[in-house]
Amino acid sequence: MRGDRGQPDTAEAATDGAELVPLNALSLVMPSVKQVVEGALMAAGGPLTLDQMLGLYPEDRRPASAEVRAAIDALMTDYAERGIELVEVAGGWRIQVRRTVAPWVARLWEEKPARYSRALLETLALIAYRQPITRGEIEEIRGVTVSTQIVKTLTEREWVRVVGHRDVPGRPALYATTRRFLDYFGLRSLNDLPPLAELRDPAFFEQQLRGAGDAAIDAAMDEPDDDKPR
Image (cartoon, rainbow, N blue to C red):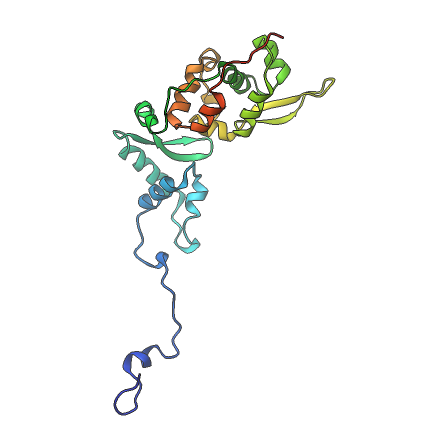
């Protein structure tokens, strides 16, 4: 628009020829590291590593690793008396429902009491504690066959995977647990596994699964044991 005497409007003249910079959220007021870390952990839906948290920032505005660790420690303190907690697992850090309130929160998903297959849970426990282990070795320890469905369920859940083959006739597959298994059950490493006697108790996994509110695994395991003597 031009003025009465044909002169350019002041606002138009000020922007004429100037480079327009698009509005970007990262150019606005910088939130605290603690706020960014908390927001990212809430939105992630899974564990985040330190590098992933640092990667949220442009390179020229990236905080030091120590600042992010301090933010994590501060959040852990903040959550100490709350129904959620910030824990470190194999895949990094994650915010989760505190185990003491998990039985109540799990009612959001449960429509009926879950019934877990002892065969599946014992198989998972043996793989976790005796890995790497073959299917035949699991069957020898348990004294019954391991159904194909059990192996399929555990591998589809990405809790176990084939890590090699035993150098014997037939070259049977060797099974071991995965990082996803550690993350799901709140373990930082295999060193955090409880004693085998406790691990073979279905109650250990049932508590974790109930806390996760995982309807899919409920359906997969809500069936009678199909153990058959070898």
